[in-house]
Image 1 (cartoon, rainbow, N blue to C red):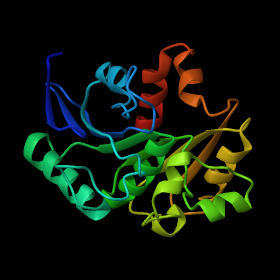
Image 2 (image 1 turned 180 degrees about the vertical axis):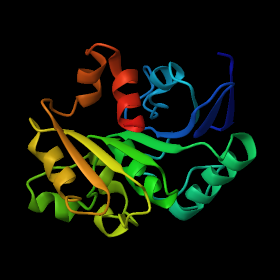
Image 3 (image 1 turned 60 degrees about the vertical axis):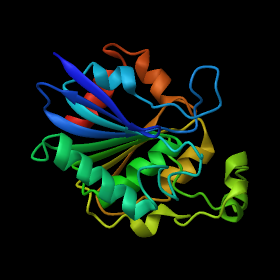
Length: 223
């Protein structure tokens, strides 16, 4: 099916599908783009295989989306407002809304899944705690980028209130730190935790299965 793609700014790209069945907001993590250090738009190939409109979002400052997106939004609340405006202006707002992200993008998928009242927020190996003192109490060294800023939302637990109809967390049980992050949201409204036999590479494991990553994502969005 024909698709149109437009970059609204360096951190936001919109893909419009001519026969879309849902709108998806895909948040990039810290994974670099090609040989460059800047974070990539993620799930581009995967979501292009499916009949979805997609708003791809990446935080080029690598601050877990806590301080807005350059030339798009000023802070976390404004990012939600601007994404809503893009969906209303450029896509079909009557369609179901899903969010997705891996690792740091998974953190964003959960936060914005709640802020946008998504039908499903899919978070793969997400961080749910990004305060270095808290992480260190769990024996987690965190990421170097976390030492460079003070997060405005250090713990997602207080922000999961049931606005998203479902938050689906898929984390590898072979990496204990990832299960700590997943367990931080255990018992929160509409949260389902799926332990996977993997480390911090659930998406790679899914890609190797029959139907690939696209099928695994579609199943969790539409189940």
